[in-house]
Each structure stands twice: as structure tokens, then as C-alpha cells.
Length: 325
Image 1: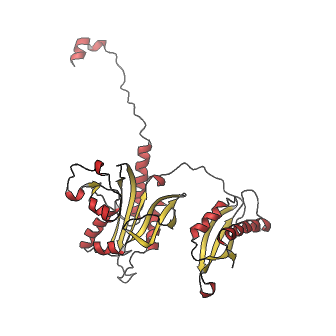
Image 2: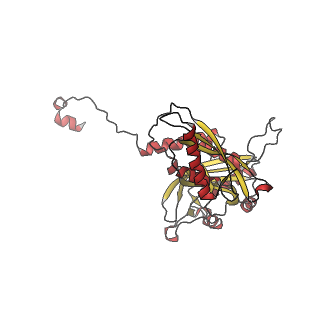
Image 3: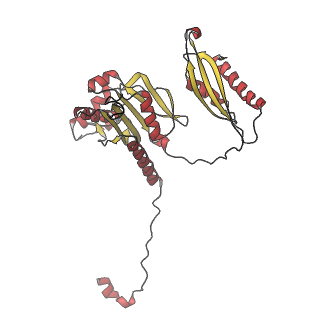
């Protein structure tokens, strides 16, 4: 007001007020949308969101074999004795939440949390953590009031419905929460990005909770990437089954890795449909794999199909001494 009085209002040029706004669509907003989508899917699959401190108790992490922040980078003034370090996993916080819900007589406890964890150098990353404890569904007339407990297959299906398709390979992680026989690494687009497991029986007993499954997955590998659209073939595809006899110790993911390594353009899909074992096979098993074969250029002839199947069989015979059943 004083400046206008000194200069004179008639000497100030009249101009329309211009509003300019910067583009708010950036990597941060894209990441927020992805996390919101994961949260919505998790809620849609029956999970409840948990929110916990980024702090936890150092002795708990050490007890279960998790990495801890280096001493020189540790908190100097923690807000509480039981929150005296930065968390390197969210799972211990979720198990505490499960314990509280069990004390409140809850029988089905599916929880998830998306949050930050730290490595020993206090470098941050975001993870999705899941815990499912107790009954796999609510009591109802359909299950006569006796719902089944959550199991490995049901838990895998729920995680897949949230984060999308993934592969399971033998677990390479080593901490005190992981079950020695019911655990696996999660592989997305050829990259190990997390793990899922049944909770170790001794940990389940120490927390005094029912059957529980856990999972923790890095967020970054799940972020959407640019994908080039591909054309759809106009020609008829063919399904072919191949039954081979291999050692029982050979896992399917090893077989799938060999098949993918052939890089056959007309081989669009391959998946197992049957595993058979009996006394006659001894230490071997019969594995049946179904293939979908389709060309983008022409209708495949019988000779073309047989050539593809022969290539696959030769690779399996060379890698695993497989024989046609």
C-alpha cells in the first residue's frame, strides 16, 4: 500500500494475473500411485494395513539373525528402550501386531505394510511385507463354522493377486523366521526380489500364535516399466504335452530355465501339468510339461512342431539325462 502511494496508482500498468503451475507428474507421483494400487489390491484380498514405527528393538533383530545398523550409525537418543534401532525388516513389527490381535481373540489376522527398511549403512529402501495368521477365511455356514488354517498354496495365491505373476525358487535367505521346508524366493522377471515362508515353528511357539505365513518383497522391482506392444498372431496355435522321466531331486524351475534358454521364437508358453511318482520309478519321477507353440508368420506344419519338441527333448536329455516316458 505504501509503495502504491509513493509511485501512484495511475503509474502502475494494469496486467491480468497469470497463474503458472509446474508439472506435478514425476517419479514421486508415479511411485505414490503404484503404492496406492498395491494397498487397494491388498485390502481387496482381505488384508488390513498396519502402520508401525521405523524403529524396533535391536535385540529382536539379532535374535532372529537379521542385519542391524552399524554401531557408529546407531541412534544416539532413542525414543524408548524397545525402539532403540532402525528396522532392517518390517516382519518383526508385524508379528508383534499379530500377537496383539491374538490376545484380542482374533482368529484370522491378515496384515500388510508398505514402508522403509534400512541396511547396516543406513541406506533406505521400500518393501512390501505381509503376514497371514490363523484361519484362511471367516467362519460361515459354508465351512460349518470350522474354516481351514492358512496354508502355503493359499498364501501364494493371495500374494500373486496383489503383486502379479511371479516364480518361486528355493529360498536363499537365512534368518530365524524362515521355515526350513516351506519357504521360497520370489522371482519377478528373472530377478529375486523377496521371499515368502511359513513362520518357523519355534518362533510361532515363542509368540504363542497360530499357523502363520510371512513375505517381504522389495518395491522397486515391482514398479511398472515401459513395455513395447507386440502383435497378436493370426495363425492357429498348438498345445503339445511332453512327459519325461528325471531324477526326483531336479526341481521344475531348473527344467524351465533350460527350456527358456533355447530361445525358441514359436514357443509361447510352457508349464507343468503333472508329476507322477511310484515304486517302479525308484528315485526318479515323471514330469509332464504342456507347451503352447504358435508362429507369427504362418500356420505351423507337423514337421515344424516336431522339430521344436525334438529341440526341447534334446536339451533336457543333455542337461538332466531325461528320457521320454
